Amino acid sequence: MTAAPITALLLGLLGSAHCLAMCGPLHLAVAHGSSGRARALRTAVLLNLGRVLTYMAIGALFGLFGRGLGLAGLQRAVAIALAGLMAAVLLVPTVADRMKRPLMPAAWMARLRTAVATRLHRGRPTTVLATGMLNGLLPCGLVYAAVAGALAQDGAASGALFMAAFGLGTWPALFAVRLAGLSVGGRLRTHLSRWMPVGYALMAGLLLVRGLALDIPYLSPAAVDVPTRVEACP
Image 1 (cartoon, rainbow, N blue to C red):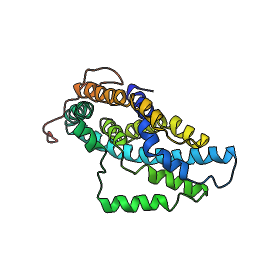
Image 2 (spheres, rainbow, N blue to C red; image 1 turned 135 degrees about the vertical axis):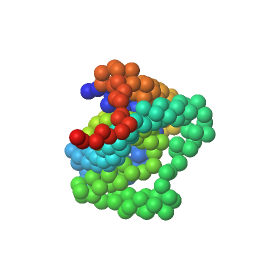
Image 3 (cartoon, one colour; image 1 turned 90 degrees about the vertical axis):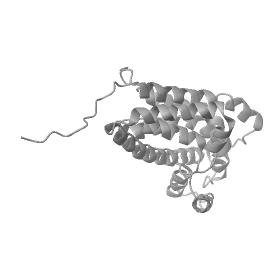
Image 4 (spheres, rainbow, N blue to C red; image 1 turned 60 degrees about the horizontal axis):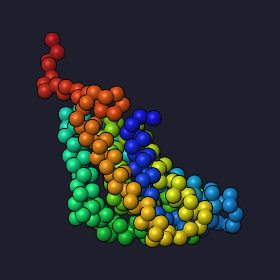
C-alpha cells in the first residue's frame, strides 16, 4: 500500500470520534432482524460495506476529475490549495464550522434522511446494504477532507482505493458500537476527538507534498510537462 491510502486509513481511524457521533446512532438504530451475535456481525458488515461502496464511487469520480486536472496542468495548484484549506480547518474555527454544514440543498438532505429513516427497522440484507450506501451520502466534514485527498489522486482507480482505505479506517469504532450495542458517551467522544486534528494535519501534509511534486516515488510524483500546443501531422 502506498503513502496516500495509508494516510486515508489513518484519517479514518483518527476521525473515529466524528464517526461515532454522526453514524453511531444510525448503526444502533438499524434492526438486527433477529437476535444473535452472528446476525449482528452480518448487519455491521453490510452497513459498513454499503458506506464504503458509496465512498469508493465518490472517490472514483473525484479521482477521475483529478486526473483531468493533472492533464490540464492544474492538479498541483489544486492540491496545494486544498492543503491550505485543511490547514485553515485546523487553525480557523469558522472554517471548521463551515466544513460541518451540508453542501447540498436542504430539500435534498431532508429526502435523503427520510430515505435512510424508512429503512432503519428493516432487517433484510439488501435493505441493510442500501441503508449503508445511503449513509455514505450524508454530509460529513471528515468525508469532505477525504474527498480532497481523492481529488489529488491520478485517476478513478486510485481515487476509489483512497476512499476505500478511508472507509476501512472508520470500521473499528463503528463495529464496536454496533456489536456491543454501546451508546456513544461524551467522555469517549472527547477523548477520541483529540486525535482528529492529527488526521487533518496528515491530509494537509499529503496534499502539500503531492502538490510540490518532489519526485518521491508513490508519494510526490515529479511534475509532468503539459504540451501547450499540438503539432500538426506531416
